[in-house]
Length: 217
Image 1 (tube, rainbow, N blue to C red):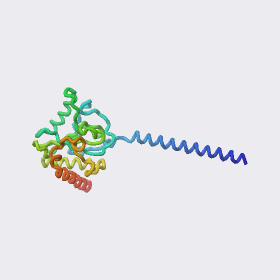
Image 2: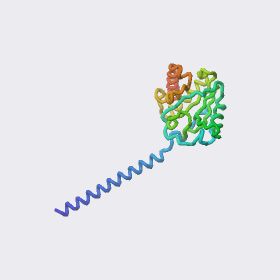
Image 3: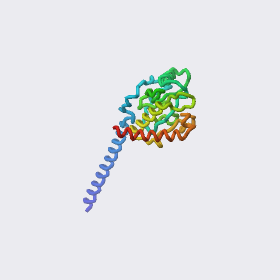
Image 4: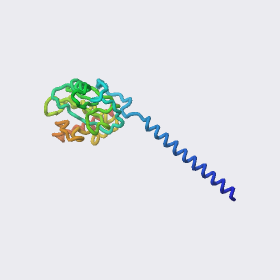
């Protein structure tokens, strides 16, 4: 009888050891998969209307920090009436000298004619949205006058780009598309802070454009 008990005890110990090894193996596999999961913006091809014009990697406007998650899109306005997308992109590039001590950039700049420049890859953070830099994509928008209202052609392109981002990264425009104001209470984008109904209409237009793009896919 004692031999039987001893044998059972040995079998139980072996089973427990195998279970423990299996737990460690599964945990190791989970850690490996997490470490090698890649970035959400990796291998994402931007639409044809987007022109890549990346900033030089530098501490002030393109730090090269990985954008490890994308939980939202932040809309900004450039605050310089009448300036072009290229001029604003070049301003971000000029910050690389560090002479002004200013940190600023954006993933995209949408111009007065609906042109879109991409300044930062979707795999890197931009210096645009303060505490939300680490999990959002930033869009700076040019505007013709001091009201900050986007022109019709610019507005439509921002809607189109935002809808594409929402579809690509599975975002909800009702909750995941925000203004710079919603992060810091800065009056940006000015017109869409001062006219909340216009902001609501913008998000509704993004949702409708998402459905349109899905139908064309």
